Amino acid sequence: MPTPHPLSPPSAWVERFAPLVRAGGPVLDLACGGGRHLRLFHRRGHPVVGLDRDLGGLADLEGSAGVTLIQADLESSDPGHESSRSLGSLPADSRFAGIVVTNYLHRPLFPALLAALEPGGVLIYETFADGNARFGRPSSPDFLLRRGELLEAVHGRLQVVAFEQGEVSMPKPAVVQRICAVAGDDPLPL
Image (cartoon, rainbow, N blue to C red):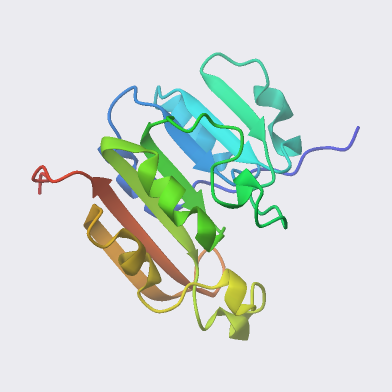
């Protein structure tokens, strides 16, 4: 059996805003990969759902209390397929205290992501943006956020806590865009 690759540490952006997620509230890690953020929230006492087309890096978590792993192709090429507009095998009425998405972009999922946040739920999103091609992959505009695109996606639906876009040097040089936003109209603590 091959030795699993060591996990990358959680994103500093995700770690920074993890405390905003309601204590003990369920967290969805969309396109969870090896589960670095799923594991972060699980350690913080949250029930977690990891959703990805390949769950191979999560075998050690199978059967763990408070961990649900769902294998789903969120980018089905069939335009009529429900996964192209929904969150895979999750019940349509699933609600989360937190949703984390990093290094992944499939624009048709934006409405389903926002609808899956409970009142006060926190969206923590960080991925590559326009200009990243000069650093390598991803380089296709299909996988790069346009300037301000995350702000546009949440406008009128979520309160923005923090937003950044630009060039970063760590963990590797890239152009990224990231947002933390909260569902609902209640004033946020400063």
